[in-house]
Image (cartoon, rainbow, N blue to C red; front, side, top):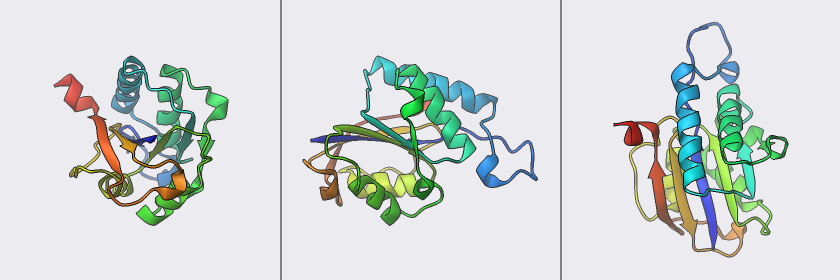
Length: 165
């Protein structure tokens, strides 16, 4: 059994329209949401063995805030260009290559790819992973290389507006 956390980056800023998409930071609401979700994950005793993030600024900022909240060492966050604006097949490839010693992995990145990934691997469909949403699935596999369609069972799906409404 493996566990995968699929985390969409928090709300990003559009304050600087000339800024490259890759460089967009989190806005104030995004930073607040990342802190909130970090606390929720800490309370759920989430402790991934591996955290891989898109290197895009908004995803990397989200990764650092959440990692800090759950006591994941910031220097151990791995950044993968493959997660930035990649398709579902590329994300599957990233997951397939996770070392099998890892029991729980967290990916932090972007939509719509992350929602497609969640729907592909899970037993339940969702319409969207909102910003800073966390979709957690227990995977009925012993090796990450075995990941496939509907191999996971939804464990929880949390997002800022769900807990603050």
